[in-house]
Structure formats: structure tokens, C-alpha cells
Image 1 (tube, rainbow, N blue to C red):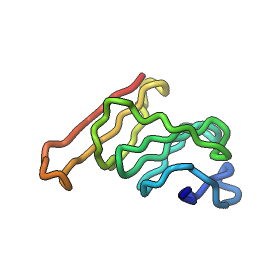
Image 2 (tube, rainbow, N blue to C red):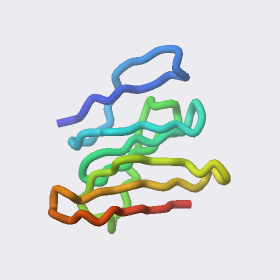
Image 3 (cartoon, helix red, strand yellow):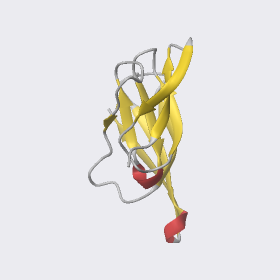
Length: 101
């Protein structure tokens, strides 16, 4: 099963795209009109470099099953991103914060 996700075309128009993941997506963040991230359940992290036409799964291999609450790109370095995670569904109430460069 493939999950339909909303895709942005520079904000001018909206349509459905295919993310190729089964997990629910909970957030989308674009660095510019081409590069963006979508995050969600199961620790899913997707990246697009073509404005949302295609998405690549870039979920870290060692990331435990988790829910990603937010993704933020560093205002100081656009190559650095942070994700905030939670595992409360596994009775683990410690927050998680991950960084990629």
C-alpha cells in the first residue's frame, strides 16, 4: 500500500503525490522551492529535491521505531537539520533530538 501525500509546487498549486511509505506523515518542511522534508510515524524521514514530485526515504538505519514531531533546518547552516522524536507509545517518555549535516 502506498500513502498519498500532499505535494507543493512552489505554493502555486497543490496535488497528490506518492510517498511510497505506509506510515502516517505528520510534518513537511521546505528549505526552498525544491528541497524539503516530510516526517512521521515509525521514524519516517523523506527528502525531496524536485519540489515534491518524488520523495526518497532517508530514515537513519539505527533510528528506533519512533514518532517524529518536528523537523527544523538550521538558520545558520541549510545543510544541517534537526528532528525531535518521541516514543511515548512504547512507555518511553524521554525526548529524542537528532542532528544531520
